[in-house]
Length: 524
Image (cartoon, rainbow, N blue to C red):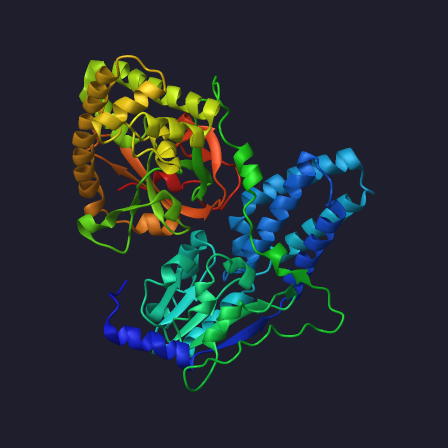
């Protein structure tokens, strides 16, 4: 990534004033047939709630989405989605046994599998050819190819590696586009709906010309309203962005919302590890993320910062911190995958030695009492009681923060003692000393781990992280355990309430990107 200069800023403004956008229609009879067969099956299977029909719908949609943005030969993309195909064939077999061969949905599924088999034998690359044609016409300038799925960026870049324009081509995920100066041209894979949440790709152009790849059988909506910014040829007022190409008369179409890959958050939540014995008072608010390598993870929604790896930066600058609610697809988060638990807590416990269990029990006790009070009174009533007890900083947000797993104590002793009295704990002064002991251990551990992380990541070749979305780092010459960096593929917008022990623990979801099966062995 090149630092953006004043000249770059001028070039970006020129993109706004002089820019234009065009749709590039794509045709392929075999892909169109498969896509329409999938749509027909989804219609006939609508409303069914058995597991195997739901699974078949999910896998067919995911396979169609993968083909929609793949620049590779259909046959090679078919190899990458083979794990999904196995799941699909198993579901089809069970459905045929359960519903019979004459069932309309079963018949539609058989037809979709037949057209998929034929498509998977094709070595044609219509999307790759279109991209190559556009890029080769701009070989002297910088070209960006925007891929809506971060997991497909590496394979897409590799596919064009042998072309003459390869040195000028940057394949980027939507979140990475804003890090670059202006391009000569931007080529956008997918449909406008795929970029919901990342509308800047279309509304704040970083090239004088934007090419939207458009499969003719997709019923694409118009570009987002602000995408008018990419039109216009004079003055400061951009023109109106063109509408998608008109369909062939009476030609069947598939709505773009059905084509864009949409994460099935309900399915992923059902894949989380089973809860251990609990009474609901150890539940916390969390955000759910899909990770590279067929994994998902819950992260504390109230946590202040999350360590991330920035592959584009060098040295110690590679390890940054971001707010959990600011994490987005394309970010690479660091998680402890060996030994469990948050890394700072594990390291702090090592420093506390034999006192760790006793002190952590005291920490859990005051948090449990606080959660009980929240449950009994509600936060607003508890806030009033705390203020009446001279805990002047009590507020709705602060009380939620104090109940979160990362919180150890309040900064001010008098406020903390007031809190403990209101929640019914005896010997509050002793709790203050105990929590000070934990806090000191956390601070010492944080300094050591920050140094170890910088050391592990600073000189590492992070190409495996960029290519595969996962990479392991050994801390302290292997004595400090392991961290693993995962690329975020998607983020659930809704918070969830989960047991505290699930936080920061990646779990398999048994669906996802083919080719990620062996990624976890990449090591730094």
